[in-house]
Image (cartoon, rainbow, N blue to C red; front, side, top):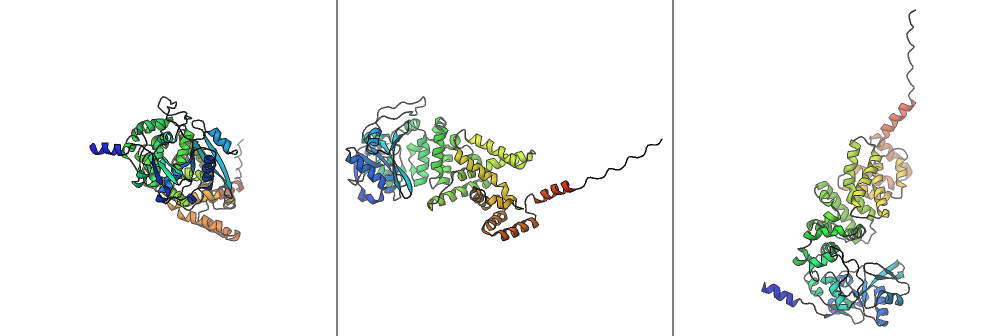
Length: 451
């Protein structure tokens, strides 16, 4: 008890100035756009710092992907300094400052220091509007975790730390600023953020920060489905997607977010498939390759779709209409909690719809399939299924060879598939053709009536 009390006293908030060079941080490691934003705002007489994840990642020896700036300037004042910028958001207004290079447009997100005055909340304590501005110290106290409350001034080359964030990074621990229960009520998404940062950065969630999560998981039911989808995407694209999903399950956060997770992880076959899909995604991110959200959700929901699909086929429905119905049913169930945008759900459905067509290896069907715009994603999905033993490896190998061959070789491959009885519905088509060309039996003349 005494040791715990001493620890709390020693960890009292207070401004600490850290020299960035001591932590190996150099100005040339920072995004040129973020540096320009800080320079121009400071030249205009405002405070401006690079804040949050970028500073945290640099202290951990990682390369940041996002650079945010916090400033004493209001959104309108930032807008006046950067004429091409735009103010967005309602719950908390921020400014997007665009920069252009050969890679296209990049956005530096600029926020005004938030104040400590109470913001309006709903019945559950969730903050619904947060446009109260304040000082740098007040802004630090409003941030979620100590490791995200670090401010770097690239001109003085100093890091300002109010809540022992640098110390917590050295201890590899994630600590909530303030009372965790109150902070989770203010914004339940912080629970998702805790699990994601813990898995992504290898940080241990501090006991006081972790303890309330499971019993307050239901607070996520008050969060709009569109915002939950955004958080789900951050989890899946964290580079540690499998670890993130496991953490969701440990803390019970999957039930209000993605309740199918229990079902997916309860069987070895589905677990293997999902884990491999997410590990493949992590590897693509590590290799700086593009990742398709449609493909990710196709993998997440495939087993549920397939289960419903097979039930409908067993009930006598035709194969393709049954698949369409199964897709729509599962999507409707999921979108109650995750509002999957149409551009992603369309890609997801196309990947699913093309799977049965891989079984059809006769006539012109293989040629028509490889011309489909979504063929490559669907083929990758087929490879994943084959890798996990959900379809025959021979089928995936055949399509690998088919798409890499010239037309004459493709004809040979089709002939071989038909000869091996693996042309899909070839025999059924032949039977239909024979039944159409068969001559109707001649009716026997009626027996003569006796007079």
